[in-house]
Image (tube, rainbow, N blue to C red; front, side, top):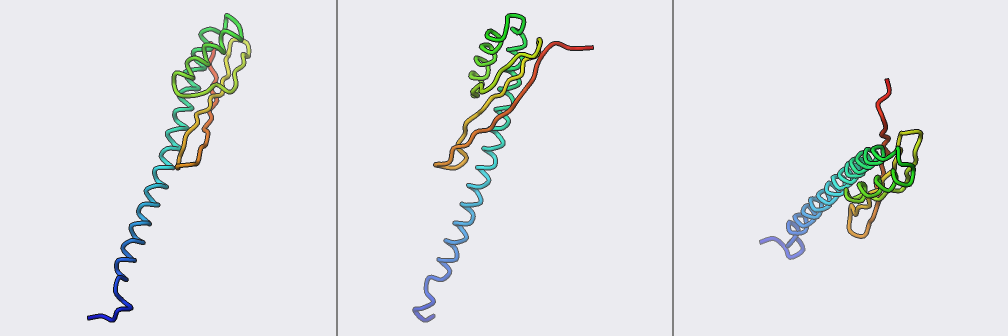
Length: 117
């Protein structure tokens, strides 16, 4: 029988190894969440730019309202919109929480307009 000073040593090592696995899992989930938020921002920006370009002939206010509507329906928030001729340039932001208590934002910019030859 081992001396009393060595009892429970394996338990402590096992708990430490379990904690390492939990921390690696949390880090992996945070990285995956960040990538997903960036992808959502890109999709919302692309679709918002397309919606704005479809209404560009009606002016800046109407085009940006269409872009804002579509970006919002795709989980984003329109933070920038402008017309450059018939091209619409939009910037969309998606807020996400990679870890509890930590809130971040991913942004993406997209341009859409008529085809030029």
